[in-house]
Image (cartoon, one colour):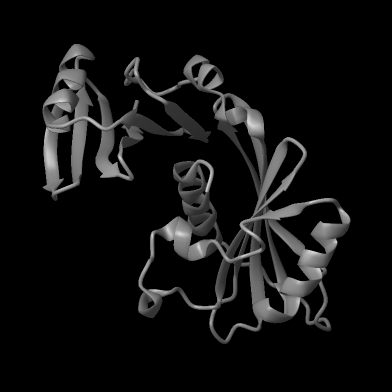
Length: 239
């Protein structure tokens, strides 16, 4: 799937936001009549992205065909042959660990735009929460991403993809690099040349978690090796 790292981060914010929002509704027959419970804007590689959260009476399985029909009429085509992308995006391969049918994620494309649809039905609630976000395909341009990189940690020159998202005063960055043996030494040198000191919090074979510090700036950084690529995920904790 194109830019898996991007969709994982986007769904993280969707899930985080939906789990902390509640809204009272008057009972109505099962139909797709969503009530907006929240709207927020983010900046993704310099482009503004509007995100909407809604809630609708009825369970996910009853609402899904109605929503899919509506999106089809609007010209949206499902990415991944209309499959549920939740296991892919969450990195779950074992069927025994598949997420509940109360959570579903789909991505759609229309011309040069992508639309993310996240649905969550709390067990026994009789209602479904939804998240919808729309972005242009041009956010994946490397030159665009370099121009609008907001984190104080400058990405390496050999980065083959970059993603920077701003939500209120939180900055998130994702850097994808060609695989490098002994990347720990390379990462240490990157930190030194940018004036950061690193503190190792956790270490696994292909994954390490650091806190990077430069004066009052603190960045949580995760380096991973996956699918022949090295990635660095960052969240700026304090400017």
